[in-house]
Image 1 (tube, helix red, strand yellow):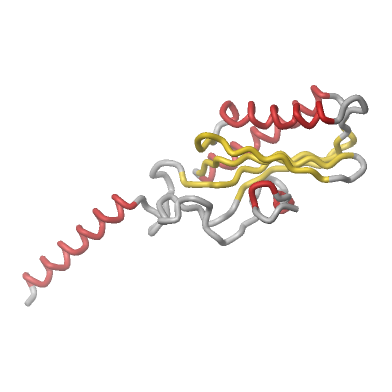
Image 2 (image 1 turned 180 degrees about the vertical axis):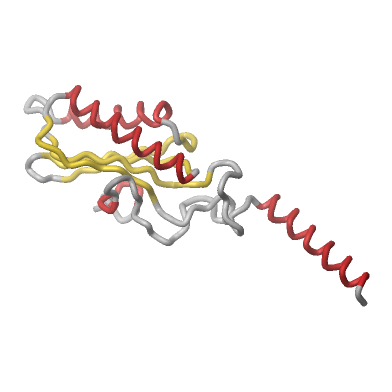
Amino acid sequence: HHPHGASSSGIAGGGEGGGDGASSSAAGDADGAGAVHRKGISCERTFAPLRGRKEQADMAVKLVEHLCQDMEEEGIEGSCVTLKLKSTDFRVTTHAKTLPQHVRTPQAMLPHVLALLKDKQRACQPAGLELRLMGVRMSSLRKVGKRRIADGAQNPLTRLLLQRQQQQDQQRQQQENP
């Protein structure tokens, strides 16, 4: 295992697309703007041994689509994608890639996941890669836009404007009711 979350196999808490539910804030966004109180969100599947490259790629597509659906429901996007693979000899490997920007759609995520899978498939020649589990995890999360942002997780400008408004309201009340 690696000492930090980006390439560790912390995907295991995944199940049906739920993340690991960690309560620490997402990496980046240290000022609380758009911070998400979980480290990552993932989706993984165990299956009968899968050997064909096309079947493995099809499984990756399904996982990415499911993960993106979960991310859309939660209004989050991420910038670090990790592919988790368990071979038929039960060896688990993870392959992470930090993306140039935050993504949340299958179109944006899939090329990176498929590239990680192809690299692993190439590395396993000539014997070939035989898998029994695959998972996709997105980390370095943040909230998308203004949808479903909890109080206290607003962007700094919105927070400042709200504080000003509250101060003005308090001053007005004090002037009206001395």
